[in-house]
Image (cartoon, rainbow, N blue to C red; front, side, top):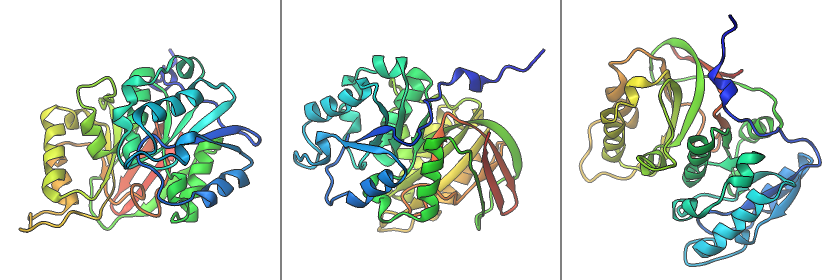
Length: 307
């Protein structure tokens, strides 16, 4: 009897092709600078770029009021001519509007949702509720600081060109080879949706985590919370991205973020890798959440391959 893959149950939005129309919206913070370069890069990929009202809107620290941000995203979720929605930037604010969005049209005809950081809320929600893939990747606000490799990884993810990420890590993890569904995102935001309709199911998945600007004690608390829920025990693998721009401690905590994370997963037997090139860094490689991947950890040599 043929093996039935769990992957078949997960919805994959149609890959983009030249001439497709995509939208840029800002579900969270307002843009502090123009994103002309980001728009030009997307256009150079052969895409028609439509800008939401939130790209130029301002309401305190947000890209418009909650009502405006909800309405702006909703129009593109409902518009069948829009094949992907890319967040202009993250920051804070997506959690304020996620429960006001109607995903009926999106669920009937899924489209790619793209972003990282605060946008983890949106990506987690569509996986939790609709088992739909999305892309954790660079946003137009960060395009001008991005490595060419990170931008190319986003283009490949959008256009369906399977990629392989290979690198050497200076931080020792745990060897192993595993195949599974990739989930995850920003650690703080993953914890923020615990117990809600947006909470991802980590069981038998390869979990990817990253974060920025956190204290070591905060990372320790979040990892211990995940362990206490039983989620860390049920993973197939763990991919640890960048944990950078750490908050300054008045008294040294005593462990690095990598040591903090390892302390909570060392008792298990699945492969673990550190320093994966993804997160709040210039080389922020696109991670297709909900995709089937193979993770291989062999000493310092790490490979993540999309299937």
